[in-house]
Length: 311
View (cartoon, one colour):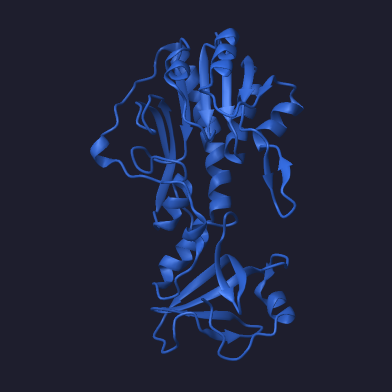
């Protein structure tokens, strides 16, 4: 038996989980995603990745501003789902949705709960320099990622792996683990494990200010910040008053007398910036109003003044 499912997701992370349900012929009675939002320089309305996929499969699509609104809850009850699956959705669910379906409401969460509860677990795991992370499939309750754990799978974080790369890898892991979990729920073989709240850590929503690099920090800390925010929202600094986004960088821990933020070297060999305990070698950057490019192309088109300092 395959339960009738309402799927709730928005971000790119949520697409593989929806896709695997469709490919395995689970009855999806509706996909719920965030309303189209203005994005980019022109502020044009843009559909979520989940909406784009759902439309290609002609799945009924709903975009309520708030899922707790009475009109949507009435619709939800009319659809009579037996299970709700949630992945990177972006709204807090009311009790009626969490507790209404026969087989409950399950969430695909990209961390090893109870670590990194919240909106940005992949970003914060990288920013904090974690060596491993994973996927947790949990039964949702009214708390923030605090429900019972159904299944969990861990993976080592690869050296230099960025948010974009890890997000893709975990999304595929999550889809496979979701399918396994649903099968176990239907076979009545899944075991629920309560989370230890005393071990909980949090991954709050990212703000624009988090991405500003403090060059008077340790090299590894800056590298991890860049990894955790690449490609979006992206770590940044300022060069002669213009925003310089940094997508990739490596670190060298070495003695240096240069002031933090100073450009130590700008040549075909390297673009090095001084930090507290060494230098960062910038690999991919994007200057305000320009395209993303490697440091060599950047230096060919940008005449850096002597003794320039990034701030």
